[in-house]
Length: 220
Image 1 (cartoon, rainbow, N blue to C red):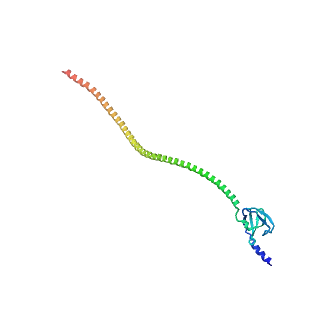
Image 2 (cartoon, rainbow, N blue to C red):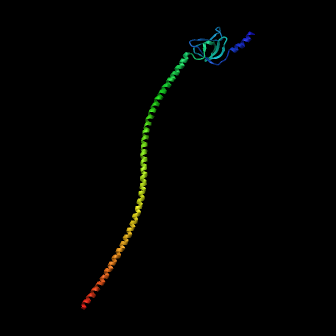
Image 3 (cartoon, helix red, strand yellow):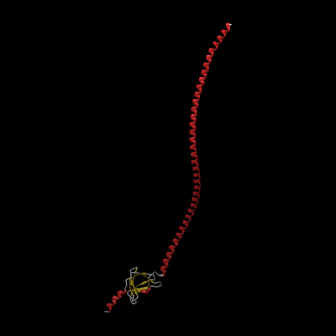
């Protein structure tokens, strides 16, 4: 009857936590077939060995574990701890330090490259600012010249209009001159004709007058 009551209590004590623990530092412990030193030693676990917890006997203060190789047995609970031993942690820390050191070198190289790029960009920026200043000055000159061009263009337009008016006036004067020349030529032609005609008339009249005068003188 006592055995029947003890068995459920024992089963309750063997809690399957399915967690991983480690054999404590600076110690090799025995894995036994049961929860006491009288049980058979199955295997010797070195310090830092990772084991999977299968169950815990709180009363006997033993823990049932399984190794990565598949060995199962009982070890004293106080010889286990939740995290890796200091030596293992040191290895991990050293690996992390090595990794951080490599990352640090890479970051330094990236920083140096970035500084160089920044320096180049700064130099280019100064050059661009200088070029922009030059372009602004040239733009001001172009605007000034543009205003002058517009003024000159307007003046040229006015001069063209004046020239066209002068050409029209010149053509009018030229026509007037042609008309005057034609009129003067006609007048001179008429005057010349009149003079010739008058000369003819005089040429005809004067002999008659002379003849009549001579005739009169002959009578006396």
